[in-house]
Length: 98
Image (cartoon, rainbow, N blue to C red; front, top):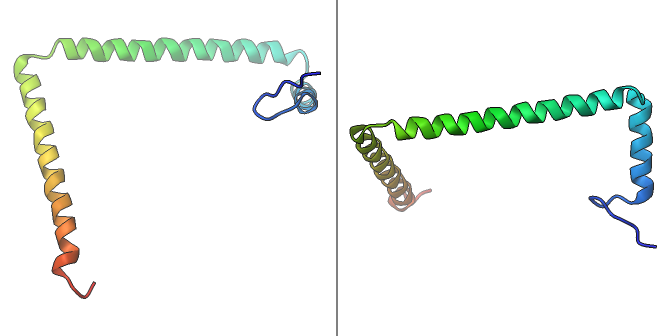
């Protein structure tokens, strides 16, 4: 007989977990909990989809000047990070007592 494993759990462990869940919540509450979880997941999915569409919409309405400004800001940040890294690399060499 093949023993199905679910995340390292055997059949006995799964049965014990189900019994404990039924005892804790009661058989009447389980369908309500499942329904509520499903609704919450649907709402979450809709909200994330809405946020992604909103981001795409904002991106498409940017002017060329805004895009150029953002590109320059990104280049400036990268240059600042490079200078900071180089300063950290030079620091141990300049202090022989460290």
